[in-house]
Image 1: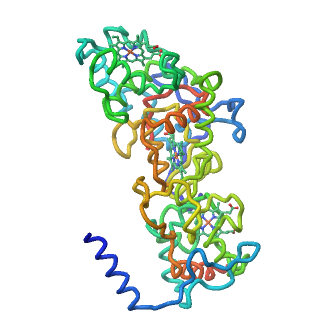
Image 2 (image 1 turned 60 degrees about the vertical axis):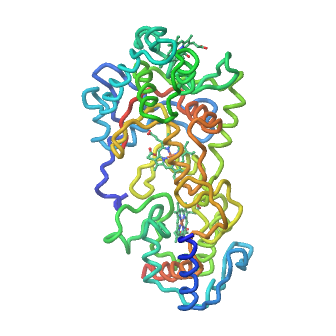
Length: 270
Length: 160
């Protein structure tokens, strides 16, 4: 660790309270199904004090600027049906509370596990008669951040049994598969090596409770599948595409590894 | 087209300089512990070049995972995923070090360390770090000569 001088590690036991009122669970007992980890930790606990501080208050959190943009979209009429999200869902802070916490979720109507992005595009295409948003586009990621923001502080609680189980198993298999020429799985970095430095990066558990994340590195909100893509690419592998069945399954599985942590999105990461 | 012509040219130029005998990735002889006693080329390893490969992100990138005190001054951010490599030749014979580089998995079962001289058995191998599928043959992460250079460098890391 001496060799990593210059990287200030944050206080292990710091508490995350947003706006002085939202108490976040950033460490807690791992869910039953996790075999190799006892305590799950939000990515926030691995960041430097400076980065952590940016998430303490919405005025300091650059991710909130993108949430503001999504509030405009929420009220904007688009498509052949002449409707806005607000026409059917009223105020986002009334109707979307708790939604982020349970996604990805089995959709009875569609007969598949759906991410928030899929659900949003379904409303756009089939209820508004509007163009679908690109899966990892700014508009889409901002809207996911808005919907997440009203569930902040609630525990992630995705269902892994019942009709979702098959998808969950697929996601688990992907999580432990060693892809690419470097032959590394998600677990190689985020289960076997969290808390270690890999070059200048302090490895976290790769949790997604904080998504979308505002990254200081690219100064925008980043979606879950964009992050997955980057991580798979870094193993010198042919990645899966955002929105692909593989990444949907992986998202369900990774989300379930964080069951019990608080919804934090939009969070701030480096 | 242009790219193809260029790489053909490099190949010719490369062959002009050193017509070294090279053991191909599939042809490496190893013992039951994954050790590789015979060098992969007939040119001796160059420790100075090996040092560059170990410290450089675009080549071995070994410091991503390993700290090496010898490089503490000139290469920033050494990783902690693998063990400190100081004093390596005091612990391991050269054949073992070469074996670890050729295919770490033969020496340390299930290790997260990549295999640097291996060209098959990968799942969804990509075209470098582009995220796209690789078309054509897999090149090993390091060439035979680069492996020998790295081995030569690592064997200088005696604790005294």
